[in-house]
Length: 368
Image 1 (tube, rainbow, N blue to C red):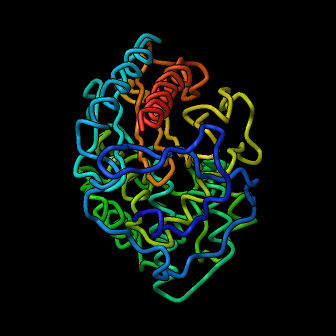
Image 2: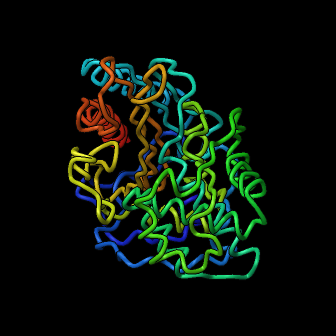
Image 3: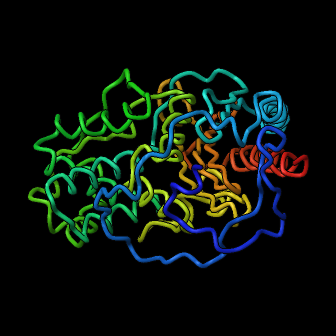
């Protein structure tokens, strides 16, 4: 069973109740989870041990009970969620992938290619941690930057993570190959290349890198801007699913643990940079805490030509014995004048979509 293969414990029983799995007659078990407060210290670099190995890859037919039991309700729930999100004034695309099911459920508009933006941060984190593990190196400064990049969506921390990857991988091209390799493990092949920039394009990062980038030989050097590469919503879902099903081993579990932590603002940032609530999409979310939701969002694009602002988020849920991966993107019809999602209805749109997903999962549990 997948639940037996995972490293994190389930210590409490949710108020939602539990549904006993009965093979093909029951689709979901809701409930086991933990309300233990998160430890906000940066975790140690995982050592790639087998405790985080990818679970059995066979389709989860024992628990899911076949397509008719769970695919149709999920499809209907996603349709309702997309309709609610679109009603806010935009276009929505969403996908959900349960356990090791042979295929996901995807609904909504076909939004095509869009930049990764901050969704590149968990990908970069996996590449950088694995590079350190390969060399037998464990650096607290790297993990501090990884934690800041994921929990605060700090772009200066992300610059340090990528610089660290470039240094350990053996250069900028090797770092790009390592980043691409992480996505290829999820079945994603990128068709575009990232932009590159030195510190002149982001002078505010000098202070962060001077303070934290002590292991970097050239902290102000040219860095890959990995958020500028493009992918599709199905690509984002494939990556979220790879995180969920253990593809990245102990390193992936480290990243998921960081994604579960409360979101914070980057040090020195202005409250006007991001005016939406941090505990709501596209930064966080309101899924039940016993489901151990792990969130990472990415947003931007207002200054592109033509403007293509989008707010996207990936989520990994532990719902009873099941791992559920979600990816969603909202593109407002009226493009904003900045990359602040709070100036759009993206938070409300994604929130309405996630509400529908949550209710659908709860309803599936009640059908047990």
